[in-house]
Length: 349
Image (tube, rainbow, N blue to C red):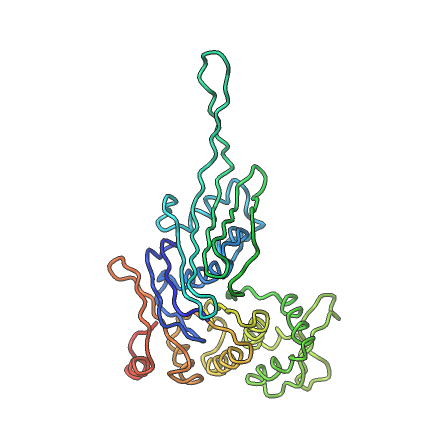
């Protein structure tokens, strides 16, 4: 489990320390406080400097298909650095209970300049190779030692130089409005192969008591999840509403990264406040059953209240991010402070 985190020079986070992390973590704060960036930092750290993260949509906020040598630097890489200052590396460090201290540094590697002799007394011809800027990833932990990888711009592509595929922990990010019904069905198939499909069925019954079965099949021409709610035929999961789909993705994500970390951006997105306690109940069960650590961002006071209702004050950690006089801050609420804040309707988002 990740126990603490320190982020420097990543996007809008000049210097942020987050202490006292727990199995279930709720990250609150105003817009642009750095909530999503915190999730991205954890995802990067779990990759141990995987250079392919330089084009991962969960990191650079653009689809790989949209990245071209002409656009990747301005649109994807430069915005990773605080104030677009590519002269200073960004660093992400933390302590993991099973791994120990870990640090990832990402820096710009300057373009290569070569000098070609002309002969005689002529001065050498200096040539720049414009599409060879690179992101250099340097990762260190007690298990792996030091690893160095990089992603390089080329005239027609981005090349990845990776010396190791080590990962200190598995992680996955769930973004709002990014559901893939085919991928969800494949994940359910893997869970059913392990004879653990009943875990999803039990979770979904929290929202729909009529539910009798959950199946994955390709009768419609592509893999999909179908549910039995007592009608004449099975119905596609998405027709049951955003809440059912959301809970399904949470459980399947946890099943995909056992002993790892699930990162959820805007966990309340598309959900009515009345079902939020049930959703948090499912999160707590999934964290226990798959031994995963959850991080979820929210803008909703009702979502924080729901987490307290479902998990209790000591069943999760609330971290509020803020920017005070240009300084990044994180306030972590203990059980008593959280109870008092919610009881007096103080601003915790």
